[in-house]
Length: 256
Image (cartoon, rainbow, N blue to C red; front, top):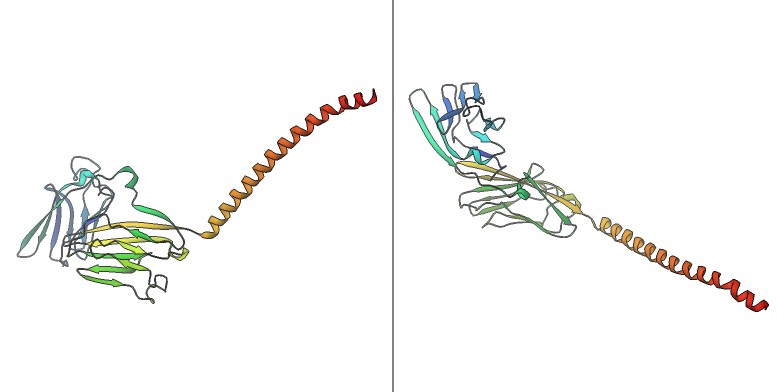
């Protein structure tokens, strides 16, 4: 999806004798040669366009290529070429980038949740049987699905924050957090590792406490009460003024 990041994995560990080259639609965009790595300039990246400007990252250990903040201009064919002393291997990746509605273009999606309620984070993709889906809270791993296996973090790993509160859907990979408290505010990161790519998604929770709600209700009640008093005072004041105007006439008649 637009705005996501994707990693194209080489599934190898590089050595000093290998060259790793990446091509996009037959245009070279990145290369590792020993300890030296090169990322394409704007001219090398297809006729002075901004397609890959500040978007490419190379892993020196594996040669994997990460493309960040993807747009639909990044759809196409990516070719990996590994050149060894006696061998040359090539791998082809085909990537399609889908548009995202304007309301969903933010990388981090924030949900406001009341204390005591539950929230579910949807991966936003169809889960494949061989995918590894890992959920993190503020960079700490809290849940993982590997094939049919589900792992939930222990109390020590989660500092008892998530004890008996996490649920993973093995069919979709969605994560549900129950009985939320203000300790669950923060960033939740999902990493989806497939056979040839990695997808990253981020969510965050904003907790609405009962105290703030009670305070809001109190202010509303006080405001309404004050408004009612003002109306009553206004009505009473008008009546008093009318009575004051009648008093001289009544007094004059009494004198006569």
